[in-house]
Amino acid sequence: MKLLKLRKKVLVKLKTAVVILSFGILFSCEKEEGFVQETTATNNLTKQEQIDVAKLGYVPEETFKIKLDLPDGSTDEYYSYRDMLTLTSDLQNMVKFADPSLDTEQREKLFRTNNTVGGNRSYTVAFVDFNTPFQQQAAQDMIFLFNTQLRTTIQLNHVFISSSEIASTPRDIMVFYNRIFVPTGLGTFVPDPNVFAGASFPSNFLPGGVLQLNTDAISSISTRETLRQVLMHEILHNFGIQHSDWRTQRSCGENEAENNPFGFVPIPGTNTSGDFLDSIMVACVGSTLGGRGYTGEDVASMREIYGFR
Image (spheres, one colour):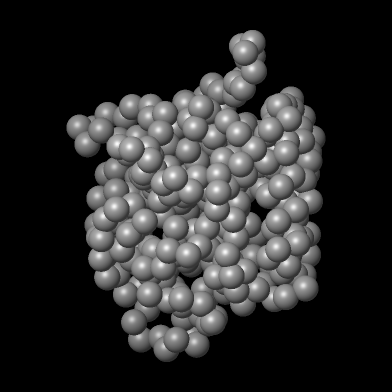
């Protein structure tokens, strides 16, 4: 979700977040040791990078380049915008659809080639250190609803693993807890307990491999219902789905009206206004956190891209 941020009263705003420290996992009352790895971040994008990320619908001034140390020991470099992560190595392929000389059919074809994943197959989601009953229930709920309510040609399998089992576990998407920091605007970064999550977009015709949950936001996503909704939202980013109010962010109590003509490829049969609120993919949530599920719009979007099973 943009990266969820609590505002006054019940409004949760999703805000740009930059990951600085990776993998500090704690849910139980007893403290456990986890990985703590530093990740560097900068907002010094080149002029061309600013132009290119804008083609994705990202606001260049709010987009940061990060090197994220993952729990499996690998390191990836991303452009981070709100709750969305794009591999820097994928940027040029992903913005090909933004060429203004292309017609709608050509743009959609490029989008499906570079910004979605292969259908008619199963993908494995590994939940790392999901040790409490509510975590496992929320994860199983998300998998069940993805498979039975969306009913696309994609099916998700899941495994629960410990951090020590990461290296030996085959998976397509890794869900893990991670400390997330946000920029202050003064060249520094601070932890924000109101930031909930973030996910990476597809790469090389595979789903985005990262879905991270903020360790500092545990109190906000500490029930089966709230965690389930966050997982259901973020997993659709892993499969290429944007925010339903990507243009105005009206769900955040704003009307930014970014009017970026290139940041969105219309999905036939769905609302294409960029100002649609009846979806789990709204940019912000308020009192509906924990009470929102997949809507007809979400089902139509996924079935249009990946087919109906």
